[in-house]
Image (cartoon, rainbow, N blue to C red; front, side, top):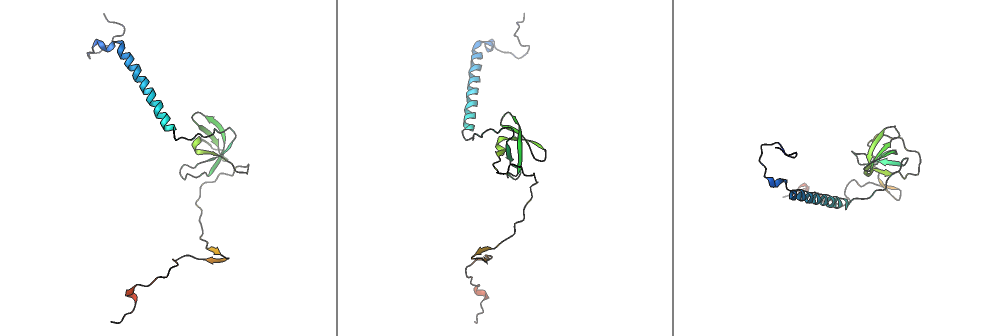
Length: 155
């Protein structure tokens, strides 16, 4: 006769494997695993910063993933679990971003600037002014002596 908990297998198992002592060992291992997981989480969160949650309708700046600049703006339209937010940009696009990549827009202008793609700006060189006189520092200001081999010598 077969019992209801028997496993159909040809691999031999000793009858002591089914004793209750193994169940208590398994429970102890589960408790140890849970403690280790919480200890790891506490260690990880030790250096984490608590960011204030954002509210729906708040104006935010969005960090560009490639340039790391805060060059896009938007409005929070939805709050999701795990610090995730849905943000609507002025162009109408909806983006999902983690709280880490959003900062509250503290600009005095209540109108959100029109979103523009990132463009490199050409910086022109301007001389510094000292008493309204341009000072050009193109070469070092020390006196340089020409090499001896260039001096005419009569031997």
